[in-house]
View 1: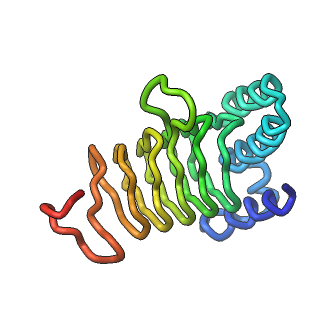
View 2: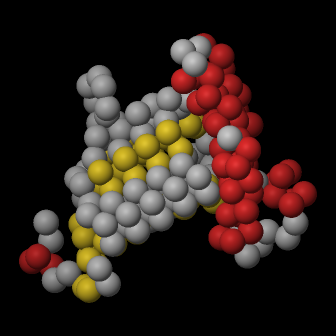
View 3: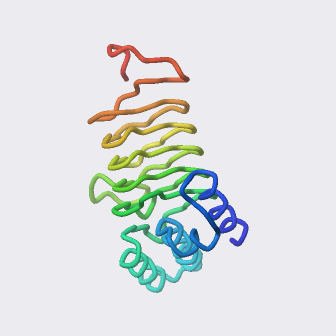
Length: 181
């Protein structure tokens, strides 16, 4: 867990040009605070202790404005930038090195049980205000535009925009409007 936390700190320097020092990151980055509290809550959750992790999650939301269910699995090097209003559901999986901006929801679509939240691959960027909903798979190196609503699987190396989300770039090539799937 400590290697993961060290990676969480390091990624802030890599991704945020405004980061000036370790002390600033430790004290002024609510996305990092939310991840640190989540990692502890998730560890307790995996031990089968549901109440205390939920209380930690609630405290984290109060302190940071970021709500991450303790059941969610968050990879290494994830950066939540300007994280106010981010919501990550119980069965969501966030791959390594994801970048998540403010107002993002990784949520469900109803009251179904079991796996009901999205899975993000590695190196995914989710733009401000985007909603990724349901038990869907988002491939590696996907970019989801600000304000998009993604309801279907997205293959790797794509850019998705709009409501509903549609692929506009696939492996660096522009997708013609009639090719959207």
